[in-house]
Length: 126
Image 1: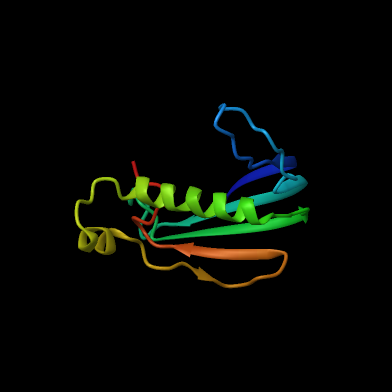
Image 2 (image 1 turned 135 degrees about the horizontal axis):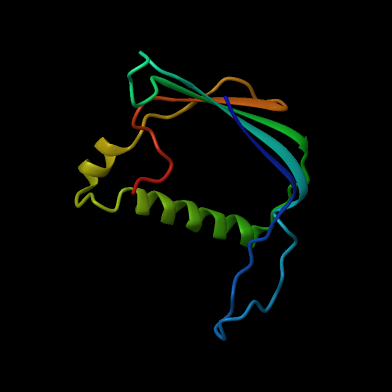
């Protein structure tokens, strides 16, 4: 099991103006939050290179989350750009649909969330 601990995390998302500078600062999306991510990989055999199952556990210690209407629109564009980047080799809509990973199953939604990924699933593909 691999563990990543993040403490005192702050994440801001602001829009720059025509001058190339941020003219209005929004409240941070994530402010002084702490969490732990645990990754567990299950392999079909000892010689397998890719895991058969990947489990991601997110344990939230403190969470201060806020969004504005502008930030929701920016997050939507950011996710669309990441999805577009992950499918950049596809030339037709059918190829994008075929290469898209299956939806992930969210086992629990409380302080702990588990997401199971199958081999080949990725958030961003190179």
